[in-house]
Image 1 (cartoon, rainbow, N blue to C red):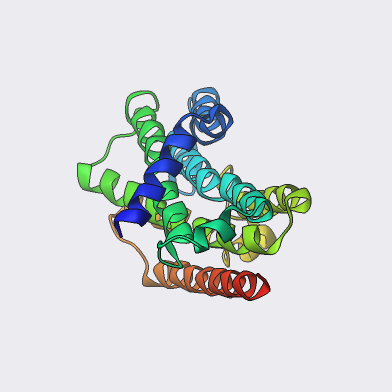
Image 2 (cartoon, rainbow, N blue to C red):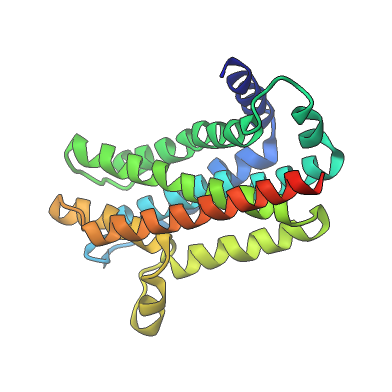
Length: 241
């Protein structure tokens, strides 16, 4: 376990020095919120400032867990780094666990900064427990994208992984309603996505102080599916070595 944590800390230090990573996970969500949060009106029965606060916090956090990891894992597999780690005394799953730990840790600033902007720039007011529930919901949602990143990163080559990752990510962003509320057929389709359900949990908490078990069940279903895909991808890669 100590070796796994050391590997996770090394990954954290690398990400902390990665300017591109910080721009996409923190810089873009903050910039978008500052530009769009002052609109009047409501979205999904909450203020536009509250809706965009949740959406952009999730946008940055999920990007941090998914986009960077897919490319990095694919490249490190090609370079032989993952194979080299298998020759060390580290547990077989140390690499994947370290990636997930680093993802979960590095998404915290993105969530925290956007939520703080929501409170002090967007004038979103609610009890402290609601802030905590929303932050934890988004943060745990990053597990879904961390698992998917492992699956895609192990399966695809570096020359093809980035466009696929961007396409998949923005599909979840758009059909999950992170940027704008969904209506009609788009909403019907979006309801199957985990991003939409995370948004619904957050807006329900803001509105009513409750959350639907159905939303939680859909999110857990996606998490289980992506974890299974990740396990299959890792095992297939191990057998190919």
